[in-house]
Length: 219
Image (cartoon, rainbow, N blue to C red; front, side):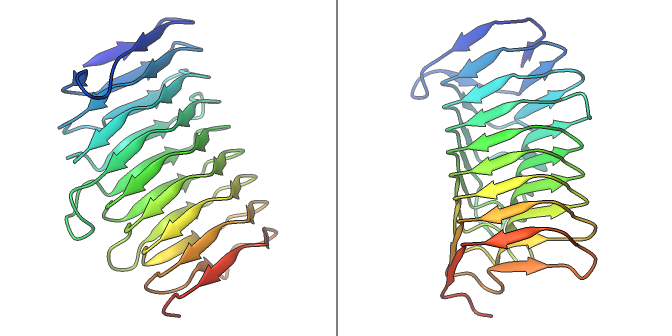
């Protein structure tokens, strides 16, 4: 395992031959960067942003075949301003029940998730749970969401921006669940899904949905 508690520290590897057999945990530290590793076979989240770990960056890493409920987990309000860039998360298959989530944000604020590839995750590619002011952009999500799940989903989230993502072969494209407000969903491409391209719950309000391209979904 790698636990990062420093400030302004960078740990770099090579995806091909630098492997972390465990997890990476950002805790308390700020402005740290971990890049270029393959992080594999973790029974806990492969990467965690938690406990006052702010403005840290995970970049250019590969997380294959995670055995955890979430490949990347951002939680606690104090985990703010973290960045997840240009990583590749690949599950076993959409019918295998782990991992349930590619990236799970619980109460985190200001998270940036950009230019990642997330594929073959059982439930949700990216899930925002009470998250706020996050920016989710230019990610490619493919074949996520077996059953009644989605490529990107939100629950009780506010003031997040979901823009310019490509979502393909997911059961639902983007799911805006209960009690969401003030979110922007724009310029996403959603196609070849099993159900709705974008679904809004009856209890969500004051969200802005425009300029999305949706085609070849079953309903």
